[in-house]
Image (cartoon, rainbow, N blue to C red; front, top):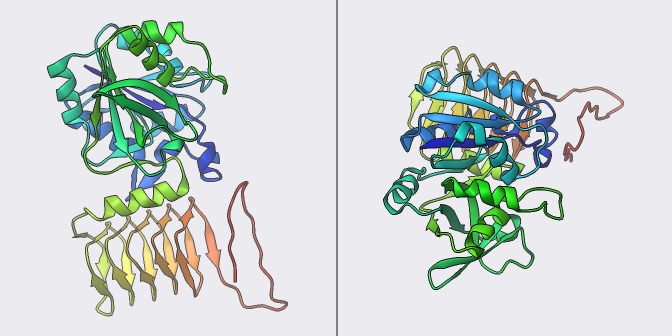
Length: 353
């Protein structure tokens, strides 16, 4: 069985962060989301993986490489325009051939992984197996309608939603999905929807089954979801302190600190992770925070946030529920006349008091 990871979207919901980085490479607990996806495939025994890429192809290839770090083979498949998930399947036909394959969205994290999901498909051998999850806001996703234990209808982002069972963004198909993707027409938003392709299979009597997810699942396509995924992953970390900590620093809870980092006269309250070559002094870093590499923090409180590499923060205040992109500078200045100075990208959010 092969794997197919979709990483070709533009990431418009995560701007401005995705103006300069692929959304699938944004970090959760200091690891790119895409790496979690690859590791889920690997855990399920899949070692031949195609990654569908678009505008951010160069960044993804640079980060992932040929797969040798995981002992797997990576093939890159170019999708010139993000024309829908079913379109991504069509352009991947040359890689997939006629064998069954797992398709997974590159910005999704599933706590339980997909091993049980794959094993069920191998055992039952349906034409399609769809991963579902009961959620509070199903209108944001594709939704499945179940009657008498069978999927009868799939709808893409319906309002109001007819059920609370959302499509997680993980599917297993056999070769019949290619016929479905070739027969369907673009939706109102101009895309070939995978929900329409699966509905085509259902309407023609193919064996389409579902699997209810165990544990949590996160689509990290929006800022709040990325922060929530960061919180959930950090809850499960193990303590690993490799940097230098002075005698005045207090550590509570599970904390990871990378090589070359120095913590001076600060309070660290886990769970949190700090990358390599950071300097943190006279500060408080609170729970559910991820600090990237080469970050400098002085006289600042930070909690429930994601701080990417090479940021410099000297605020003499508190930061929370925040995502800072690479190389961001946040500082407080004492001068008259009192004023704020901002150099900010598109669609940023600034809150001041």
